[in-house]
Length: 514
Image 1: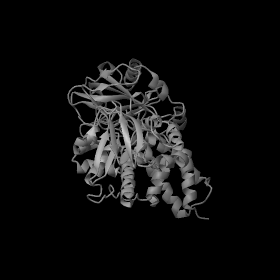
Image 2: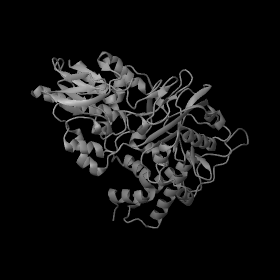
Image 3: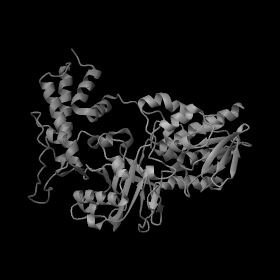
Image 4: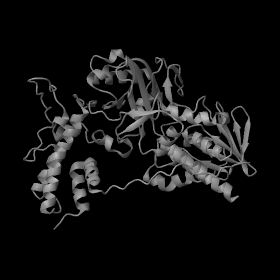
């Protein structure tokens, strides 16, 4: 009997997990090539002449909507409650005042030229819409180091370099699968040729010995490092499967860079993630009204009337609402009961960051960008990508996000700023002993405590994708909806931009049919 591809991949997944299956599928040519990005909707020039649109929110979705509609001749007004554009694409710099609901204001005191991205901080290469706007608007981009094998992975009783975790896990799983092949323990048989090919592949992939046993790998690292003359170095003793299991290493860390949205290379705008938002803003600036919070929306004839916090009204033929779902759920608006109920049911996940200015002590440990994974509620330490070998940099001393089973995101979110700083400092001391005293000028942002944002983004389940998601995508009267939560790329700027494309295309279709 010969092995089917499905049977082979199923068995491989049982032993090697997602990482092994993913690589095998690539080699077998089974991964579909993504459909090419067609670009933003091509609205006919002048098609919007004589028609007005009010856009609620000047985040990426709102700015993209305004940019594209203006090119088609629409009369556009963008209303933004904040004194800045970009929404969650927010880069905090020296002088930035961080306001948190129910918390004292913080004023960032970073040195000139330093910043941290409080919200999105990386862009995958397949986010073609965002890349396209950056290219068209001449926003300089640079590589963002998302994964660094030199960064630490906290095992509880010790910190190991990520390269050791990744390569030892690969070696142990390869050894198990090789043993299963030799013992014919798999549920189907390979042909003689395929067995040999698979054995050779596993031997190379997992650095197995000729006997199929994993005894460590130079890819896992050395202690001491190889040097000159008679200094060959010593390969690290390999971790056992039990050690890795006991310390929860079967989580996302070893395969993080193989997740579709995390694959290298990643990019960032030079000087801060908000550079893209502000490049869009420069194109639509005369049409944007900052510091104008929306309190009420009504239908007026065939159009809309929007009331602002100061009592002023803005009327238009159409509206594109890009505000976060929790805010829209509470907005005084004549939306249907089904719409309001779906809005209210969509949870926005917590997300908290702590950032420090510091001398770049991590570079002395060979760490230039990337993430370190910890076992604390603060979760992730994020090293800066860029400014190599400069005197100072900004290290993100915690990045806690999501509702993870057994995680501490809610606990961390509820802490005072000082308590977050204490935990973050302690985590960095554990990763880099003797250096935490260098951390200075801390600032923290928690997104569910940030007015007008109310969380990192909307979290859908397979069930609510079927029920509530279509309802929230559906326009009501002259009102259309956009935002990252109305995409299958939630939490990303790309999702916000693509949802804006859908909204303006639907609006244009309405206009064309009128």
